[in-house]
Image 1 (tube, protein in one colour):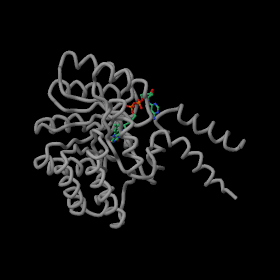
Image 2 (spheres, rainbow, N blue to C red; image 1 turned 60 degrees about the vertical axis):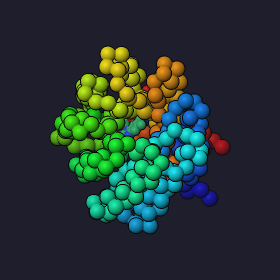
Image 3 (cartoon, rainbow, N blue to C red; image 1 turned 90 degrees about the vertical axis):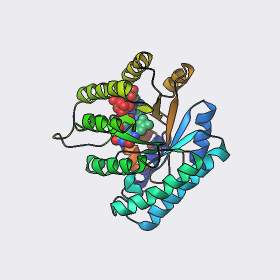
Image 4 (tube, rainbow, N blue to C red; image 1 turned 180 degrees about the vertical axis):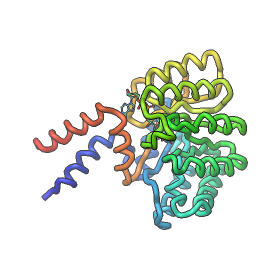
Length: 290
Ligand SMILES: Cc1cc2nc3c(=O)[nH]c(=O)nc-3n(C[C@H](O)[C@H](O)[C@H](O)COP(=O)(O)OP(=O)(O)OC[C@H]3O[C@@H](n4cnc5c(N)ncnc54)[C@H](O)[C@@H]3O)c2cc1C
């Protein structure tokens, strides 16, 4: 008999499937290939965070190395996106650096771009430190910064001074009011301010948002400041807009997560949008009818 929790998990997975490639590296590369056929680039992320088991960390590092090696064979234009806590930061900085070094070495051999995801605010300083340490050795490295944090304006300024490649996001983590903007209006206002800074002073940055208003403003800014930049969106979200942007010759990347650890990622996506909660509710009702 299926328990309540099992049923809930089954339903959640049905909803989450739209955002996740599947369990395996081959699923992720297949999604990347589909993106490539639609003239989009791919950014592959293995799901999972806050790992403390060395075995789990090793397997994550091995998989990133394998993906980096596979892009050419699979004929996809791709990057990877790594969370520091999935490669050892929850054990120690030393462990994380040692593992990131292994990934970067493979990325360098294959000329693959690597992004550092930004996690909750407890890890912002450490993630920027990792970025600084590795960017001086490997230039095809980018870092995500979150517009919901008050500190980010200073971080953008400091990082642009060294020529950093920045992915600007609104921020997916719930943060304390003392350090973050809480209302959507304030986060959006800060996003627009930081985005303008990127267009004026940055290069090779990423506008990572599904927000039509923000994307339109970026399109307008790109006419005034002709910079190398790309739009990044999550797999399965706003696909119609991606097609329009590609038609207009903008570079668009799909962020493609894969793996069995899909629950926290899916909760973040569900919380982002009322309609996703409704989708979850209606899937639950349907599954009970069957
Ligand atoms: C490529 C990429 C990488 C990211 N990396 C990080 C990271 O490293 N660290 C981090 O904290 N966050 C990251 N995020 C998540 C980000 O911080 C936001 O939580 C997420 O993008 C939602 O914000 P939004 O800009 O789309 O705007 P929102 O204000 O959330 O949404 C604006 C509009 O976009 C559409 N939309 C937004 N989300 C959804 C959805 N789930 N389903 C359907 N439609 C939707 C809706 O039309 C909505 O009205 C990343 C996002 C992207 C796209």
